[in-house]
Image 1 (tube, one colour):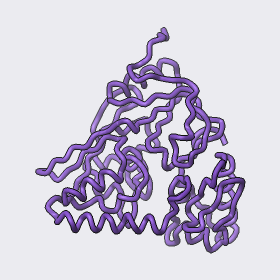
Image 2 (cartoon, one colour):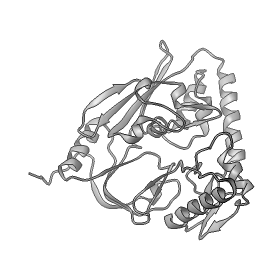
Image 3 (cartoon, one colour):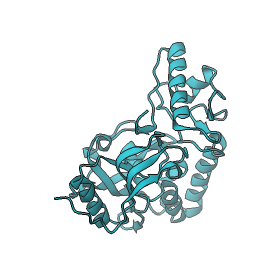
Length: 298
């Protein structure tokens, strides 16, 4: 029997999602919730399961493109999962899934803990970092992950070790599972000079700001890098910098970024992604694979 009661975290209907994504595009969620604890998360999962609703997870919304038509089912945003714990004896940081990656990098640097300097410019949250095995500067989440706490769709909680996650380039087994990251523990190295770690972190941050466009909405890198060439180099050599469909534009500063120049639709961006793939494939006989997740109907 389906009841009318809802979890402590209010589940709302027809909630616009555009402002919850870094692209600033997309339609509404049929149902939406933003749990603040594992108990709330489990109750929300039970509520959705009782109604047979498909589940979609959002973190910082920095690596996804949501359809103009929105998303059916229950959309769960985990950005309110907050909290950091520093274990100096073990040299570990445990962070809730909604913690911004950059905040953790700066907090580690302030303590003289080395190992996350590379992550300072990644515009996402801990959950997305682990699920996507996100990386920068030649490093990635798999290099320093000690363990991760997950909750399954049926509400069961467990701890997983890195060797269970099948890490590879921008991939983990969590991408094709029914498991939700609630927190992760990273193994770092304490005891470094704080000024040295801060200086390295600042250098990485400045490099990202100089080489990537932050002045307009984007999702970060759109395509995975096909070894040995970088996606941005291939797109640039194809002559697509500045190419525009509607208000979606291939960035002039870094060709692996697509910008919302003001009023772009998800359809504009989707069509531009397809055009870039087509043109690069025509010139290089290589189909670029999107790194950005596409949610909803296109």
